[in-house]
Structures are given as structure tokens and as C-alpha cells.
Image 1 (spheres, rainbow, N blue to C red):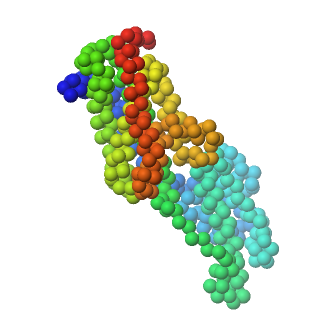
Image 2: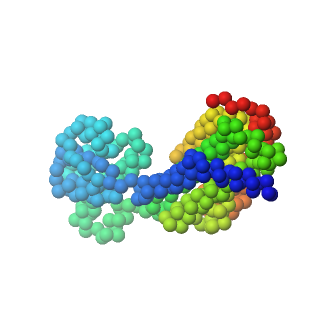
Image 3: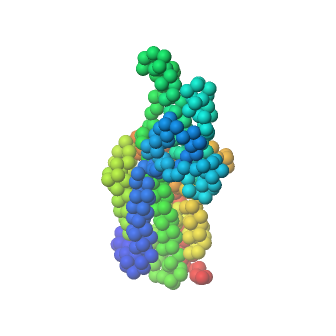
Length: 386
């Protein structure tokens, strides 16, 4: 224990002396937390620009346009004389979609001749395109419903009869745990831990590689009486405590201050934070043990962290990927972290429902056991090559 504490104090001096540790362990992770939660603070993109091609220009079509402009996600920013002009505005990224109302639409509506209106939207940005599509489709449906309602009222139908005729089946929609469709809730809870895991990978590999680079590896092992396990525990103890403090700050901020849903309770959040830090550090040590080179180990850690964002399963469901890609996803700590968060924290299921992901994170934590001898040999015999 005394050797562990001596090495931990030595590591504290290194952390304070080299500003790269302070920035990558504290400043950048906190900046990432504040940045992403602030960018998506509204929950969804609001007032996305859309255009109008209204060749009918009647009170009915103007009412439709005002209703579209009143939607939360869309804002009518311009009117265009033709479909070609509106299409060019989409191509120039001025608007995300437009509503086309041909001449004679109102007359055909009142005559029950089923006029055709069109809307166009871009899917270059999937989230923006989907939200604009929803609003344009809704306003198109509301337009026909409004005219149908007026016609039925003129024929003497009651409001209940009109509602039944216009909407025979009523949809009772329930969005579990995220009824506001808050993008911040399901994106920040993956992006922020993923970026923090990237910093943990890199700092872990860098701190080991720096011992070779600066020629202090033998001195480090001598303080541990050449016991590589004691040397590693003492070296990473201060880093673990700092990373845990930053992770607890992240969880307090998003779940306590911002009020993200967490029916799983505080215990599961604390357990997830500990597994998050320990698994990331374990993987970083393992990668350095496989490739005892500062440059190569940090490159592999960067690559693994970047691939984790695609294979976590948030932006694109993993079940829709090819079989080999699904199998490869089990090798990424972020995937197991996200599944454990989703099952036990976000949905509140017991840990037993996610035991495999829990075991996987514990396995990543224990990976350094496989490369202890190789790390020791590298520290004693390897010569640093820039």
C-alpha cells in the first residue's frame, strides 16, 4: 500500500506538471458536457425554414400557410413564384422543404373534386427532413379536413358525426420515457460518455507511453519494487479518481439539473459511472500492452473510440446492420455502456436484464491482466523510437 501511495503521489506531480492531463481529463470533458447539452437545449430543432409556392392565393390557402407557420418545427421564410425557384432554394440550402399549391385548388376543394397539392423536402439532414416532412404532411391533411368539416356542417351533421367521418380511427400515441421526443435525452447520453471515453483511452495510453518517451519507466517500476501490478494501480489511481469526479459531475448535471429521465435510480447511475471509467482505462492499458508504442497505442485508441459512435446503436439501430458488424460491436465498451444505460437507467429494468453488458464492462476492466508481463518487459527493455 505504501508503494501504491508513493507512485500515486508521483503521478499527481506529473498530472500537475503537464497541462495536457488537466485539459484532457478536466477542461475538455466538462466543455463537452456543457457544449452538447447547450446545443440541443430546446430538445428539437425549432423554426426550420420552409418555403411556399401558392399559385392559388385564396383565403383558404393563406389559412393553411398561417397554420404551417404556427407549427413549432417549421417557419415560412419565403414565397416562390414557381416550383423550379423553390427547388433551387433547397439546393442552395436556404430552405428544407416547400409546399406547392396549384391554381384552382380552393375551387376544386369546394366542388369535392379532390385537388392535388404537393410538398417537397430534402433528406440531406435526416432529422431536419423528417421534422419538415411531418409538418408538411400534417398541414396537407388538415387542409382537406377543414374543407370537409365545413361541407358536413353545411349539410347539418353534428360535431361528433363530423369527427367520426373525418377520423374513423383515433390514434392513441404513447412515447415511452421520452414523450417530448427530446433529442438531447437520447443523443447527449451517448455522445458525451463516448467523448469522455475517448479522452480516457488517450490519456491512459499516453501516460504509459510517456514513461518510455521520457525515460522514466525503470524509475517508475523501481518504486513498485518491479511489481507491475502495483505500479499500474498506483499510476492510474489519481487518474481514476479525477475521471470519476468528472463523470459524476456529468451525471449530476444531466440527470439532476437538466432532469433527464432516470427511473433506474442513483445506485445504477453510480455503478454505470464506475464501470464507464474502469472499462475505458482497462481497454487503454490493454491496447498499450498489445502495442507498447506511444504513437501506435494512441492511434488504435482513437480509431476504436471513433468507431464506437457508429456501433453504439443510437444514430442507426444495430439490429439493422449486417451480421458481422453486429458481432464486431461487442468489442466496443461504449456499446455495452449505452445498453446498460438504456436498460437499467433509462428504462429502469433490474441489472439482471443487462447482465451480459455488465459482464462485458467488467471484462474490459480486467483486460490488463492479459498484458501485464508484456508491459513490464516493455518498460524494462524497450527503447523509445520517435
